[in-house]
Image (tube, rainbow, N blue to C red; front, side, top):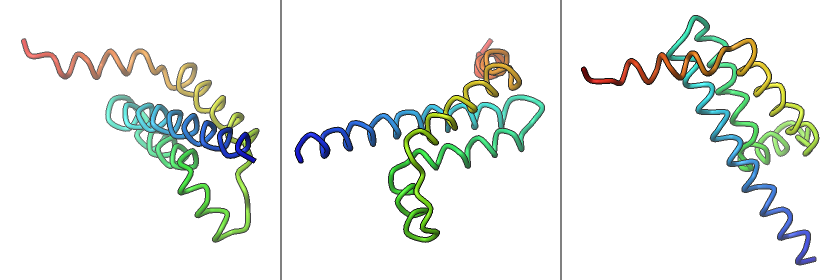
Length: 101
């Protein structure tokens, strides 16, 4: 029993970490770049990684977001942000806009 509780806590922590990363990706795409609605879409998807929101979705809809679905969603976010969303170019734009001088 302790092993399942420990693995649940580890998966919650990993899910939360990736949710924060996806939130940062979404915010960068929202405020720097050509596609603010794409960034907002990624921000909304990032909330599905937060354990509280995942439990809320399960309680209200009865639909459980399984681990493999989160992995596939995370791969989609990374693929779209790095490939289509040109994340590194947008990070450079963001860094240039914060430079003083």
